[in-house]
Each structure stands twice: as structure tokens, then as C-alpha cells.
Image (cartoon, rainbow, N blue to C red; front, side):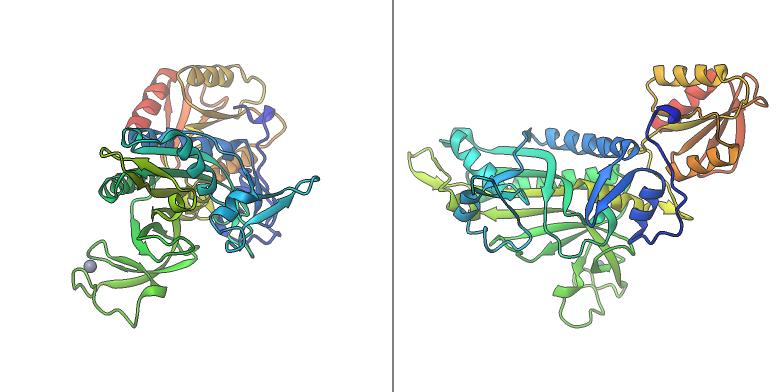
Length: 415
Ligand SMILES: [Zn+2]
């Protein structure tokens, strides 16, 4: 991607008040643009990160046998009345058509996916079934203040599973939990805290939340430094001195952000839509369901909250928008930098090429730091037919030939 031809614009606006770290750093580096409270446009560099996150998620969902679909955002009121959620879910956006039909803007998709499953599941042979989508959700949050950690319109992966009996759901629930850990680790989170959560507005048997520790978090997490114990502070009675699991006194409390959740819905929604199947003995039985969410734009925000240093984003290798940033400092001749750009692109690398002519070296380096890719390459009159190689996390600068640069990039990203 050439900077001169694309909408990549870093903003030095330090006077502006930002509501959170992710909001400030993503805005300054030109990844997002705020439209209104809780509403954001994702700009080209931000879109690249989201697509990488989505690919990681899609890969793991397909791995556990889930089928990808796309469900609508406009939900007829009757479906939300059937689950008795039209009036009880307070964050639901409601819209009227000019013919006075009422709709909900999808805040969740049980009202769509359950009737869909009813059209396809007839007998035990049609089970289990798992359907997921990557799309947009709408929630009328009262005060969205955490940048893209909490939006009124946001990206989400939601998966719904349908099973003949509870044991089958339990086994799949564990599979999804394992897949979630893999997804979050691949996205650059090393320490994921899983908490068992209370019911919310579903009358569910149980649910689990996946959290990462960050000062930007909206929940207080009590966790054990010696084992996997973690719980939301609100549910804990009294002051916990010792870990209830392992007895360690290394019990801490820190802020955390929830990046995913899984729910055992049992028959909550299959009852509403009379979703049943015929078992081997010819008897009608209710279907048990699970639902599993990952906030995708929220994940983008959480990555920035966890991975930044000195007010600069430090993208993990797996989701970096660009493998390297190539800066041309040759004043009179860009042909060698152009050649390096084309060569690296042909090798399959995502390169952000700063080919601007009217911009100072200082500004190019600043843009590069704001974007936060792990590798910086510089071509100038000084480097002649070589390229300057610098890692973001290392001050050392070395000169290499084009062939060596290709090998170094390959080694760096496969390590
Ligand atoms: Zn413990």
C-alpha cells in the first residue's frame, strides 16, 4: 500500500480529549474515525487488522465444524416478541418503517437463528448443527466511553450450536472454549482469565467469560497468581484472602476487559420457537442450544490497550496491518525504493510504502512509529543498493541486500 495513494493519515492533534487509550492511539495513527459516541468508521489500516483477526477466528470456527452464514440486521418485532425480549432487553434499538412495521436492529441473533434451525432440523440425524457469522451488532449502550471497546454499533462473531442432549452440548461447549483460548493467544494475549458468570437476561445453566487484564477494563477481576482461579469481584462475598481452588494467598484484584463469552442456553430459545427433533424412538424432544460470542472490534481495541508502549501501538505479528513499513528518503530518485516495494509485495508481504515526496524524513519516521508495524525498512542515498533493517523492539540498525531482506522477513514471520 502506497501512502501517497491511500487514505493513511496520522493526526498530531494532541489538544483533543480522548476517552481511552485505544481511541487515542487508533485515531492518531489513522486506523479509526469517530462518527459519534459509540459509532466509528474503520479506516483502511484498521480494516487490515480486523480482516486478520477475522481470519484467525474463521479458521478456528471452521476447525470445530461450524458453518458460516450471514444473518440480517433488521429483525421483525414478532420474533423478539416470541422470545419475550422485545420489552425486556433495554439496549435494543427499535426502528419503524414508513408503513409502520416495527423492527429491532440485531443486538444478538437467537431470534433469527432458532427459526432458521427449525426449518432444517427434523430428526436426530440432523444434529448436531453449529452456525456462525461475522457481522455487525447494535446495542443502545447508555454511555459508550471506552473507544471501540464498547460501541453502539460493533463487529462481532456469534456462533450458535444445536444438540440432541446436554452431554453433546457440554462437549461442544468445551471445544469452543478451547478454540477461544487458541484464538486469543494467536491474537497476542498470553494471559486469559476465564470466569464463570451469572445469568444475565438468559435463563441459562451456566456461562463463561474470557477476560484480559488491562487498566482500561470495566470489570474488577479477582484472580489467583498460582492457579487458574478468576472471578468477577461483584460476585465474590467478603474479602478473599486465600484462593478457594489452591489455597494460595497470592490473590490479586485488577481491571479486565471481557473479549469473549460462551453461554449454555439450554432450551431457553428452543422452547420459544418450539424447536424440537424426533429421536430414534420416534419421540419429539426439545433441542438444547449454546451461543458463543467474540466482540471483534472490541478485540481490536483490547489488543491496543494491552500492546502499546510510550503512547505507540505495538501490533503483535499475527495481526499487524503491515509486515513492514518501507520508507523512501532518496530525494531525487525513488526507483530503487519502488523496486524493493514491488519485490516484497510479489513475495507476499504486506508493505506500507511511504513514497510521499513533500514530507520530511522526521514526519515519515513519526508516521511509521504511530502505525506500529514490527519492522522498518529505509532506502536512501546513503544505503545505495541496500536496505536499512530495524525492528520496532530493537535499536540496532543493519544494512542488507534485497535478497537478504526477503529472507529476514520470512524468518521473522515464520518464527
Ligand atoms: Zn489458586
